[in-house]
Image (cartoon, rainbow over the protein chains, first blue to last red):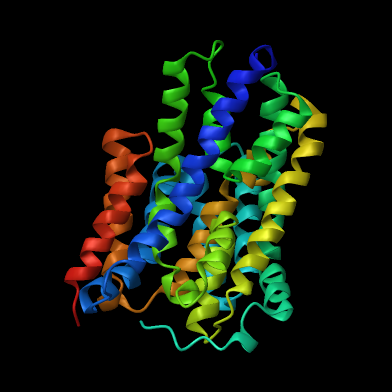
Length: 103
Length: 237
């Protein structure tokens, strides 16, 4: 139980806060110290897509058929409508329906 | 990628701040659901409401908070604290890469403004800021507005979750567990530049899925992102 060790809790929280803030500023700080050439620019251009794709792909592998159906619905709606709100709503609706069907 | 010269008049405007906050609104239901789930887990772990909200207010990183709470030990030894800190660094390491992508938007700004803004850096405003920048937006208050909006929602909606305790049902019932991946899928459609210029995206996805499949754990994110990044560098057109 956490409240039995209040001091330890606050020490841990303080350390976590520092680590999390450092991860938030470290990349920004580092890039500012480097000269952005064409190679680094290509890297930066590729980064967002790579991070996003790396986040999504395992969710598909882990989530099985339910995740494939839901994220597939999101993909189709997004390509057709180009509004992320409706795309995500469609994904959640399919996921909820798949759950109700026992997937 | 040199940012255009900063003119003080069109930076840090209230209008851009407000626009940033409005543009992250689609993420609020998912974030609120996540925060409520966090509040529920915290209550079950025996944290006080004050401690629960203090953690949200100082850390402001949902995955970190959930993973750390889940593995919180019975007794806080020095070793246990070191383990928690290492876990925190690993889970949040992706922000090193995310922060690097913000150099064009924040680059010309005073450090006294840029670094506090980065405290509020989370994924939804980051994604929206990338789009904002590629559409010609140059006011970093956009990023701050989105971050502060997310922050307020994240801290406050943990309260009903905490109070409800175990009453929150299975998040799968409403598809809440897939909201974040769904947002990412939608963003991938926006970032898609045709197969020839999207190698980073493709390689990142494949390598992350393979890493996940073979090793499990959280390494997939870092390995996949780095692989996608390398593919992007080599893909000169």
